[in-house]
Image 1 (tube, rainbow, N blue to C red):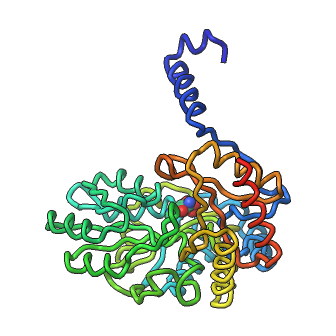
Image 2: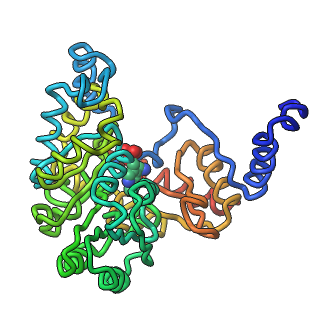
Image 3: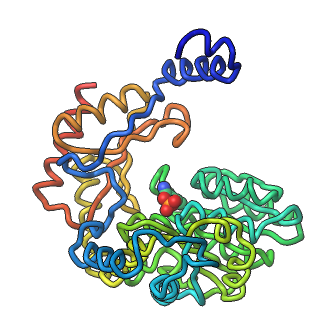
Length: 377
Ligand code: PMP
């Protein structure tokens, strides 16, 4: 930018200084095209369904039938018969009374929290919750108590200190460290306080539970009247979009009042059709295959296995983590890299994602690439 411009516009002078800080902290991000022939251990396509012929064919067919975009809010022109079918299919699969599809998991979380929260509703939120839950808490204008990670006693104390309406907010599987939330204990605490438990199953749908129904379903919590779940369609289902799962009464109120639903263009029919086709392919065999690859990959990398598909290989320094990621790429393997603010300072790591369709040879290739990359940086 010419010097004169940053002299005139105070914002650009500020941005110049901000950028210098980001560079100095080793936190510059790049947008690399994903489809580059590398062995993929970075995506969230946990079941390898985003390129499954049935899923692709369903998306293509929906584009011919309904067009490439949904053309409006779901309340206006953006609900096709496929949207309603997907609402029903998600509810049926996950054992929820009802489901409502949003155009992303991010917006599903904003919708759920803004409708359930409010200035007189306490939100009790795990410190490691996903950014979309954090933003939903903020947008709801609720008082928020952030409790230490997976700390049920802290949740109980927060609820006890606020006898009114409350929502306990947690990821099911945390993307930061791959751990599972203590869902049964959180549900018991919420139940005692008359609170709702809101669980983000983004990393659990298609990964845990019978037929991939998620972590709540695995624990028998799916039909509980005080449990609300959110999911994304962009991970194990290989599509795009998200949904809120819960009582029909809540669905009705989301349709009428959730700004993230009302004022957003409905999910593209192609994505809806892809998610429906993918959901039909999610079964116990695929879920078991993913778990098996996850165990073998963890073993090969010498890292702790996790209940979900994402494994963390700790590095610490963000610069080293990026260099290791680059070295993996040079070896033909794409892995993820978590740096602050996604993880706490000093917690940078490689994120290696299991996929149900990885072969034994690919697991070995990935393991070798990561091992050699970490030895080199
Ligand atoms: N919740 C969690 C836990 C996630 O990991 C993500 C995606 N990174 C989201 C919500 C947002 O979902 P989407 O990408 O569909 O907006």
